[in-house]
Length: 148
Image 1 (cartoon, rainbow, N blue to C red):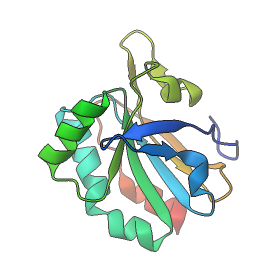
Image 2: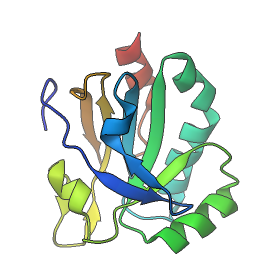
Image 3: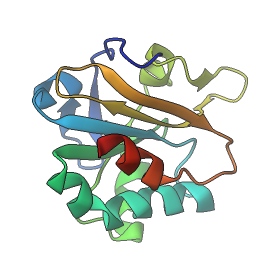
Image 4: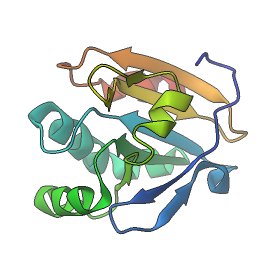
């Protein structure tokens, strides 16, 4: 994916089993925060950072969501464990990593996505795209910088 390209549309279930369709959010920006696996320390910090900054995102007309290949029941238990109140975390479980594949960030050899932030603008185009080392916590200030 490159900045300026149309972001592929998709529908995934969130931790509550509710559909999340990217195209339903036209007119808003959406931050797709891909993380490799639930129940891992860096991924937990990544999701908690999104939750902690939720109001900042809202003020900038941004809907943040987490995405990984974990199934919905795991996502639900993990969201409860992290005490998420607002953040939706999406299950790219089946077909395994289909959305990560659409965005070119699926790791075939390990069956997980890269760690990445993809900001989709109000018209459905990629405004920011960055892949991070698996062991590195993404810097949300980079995203806020693009939003300013």
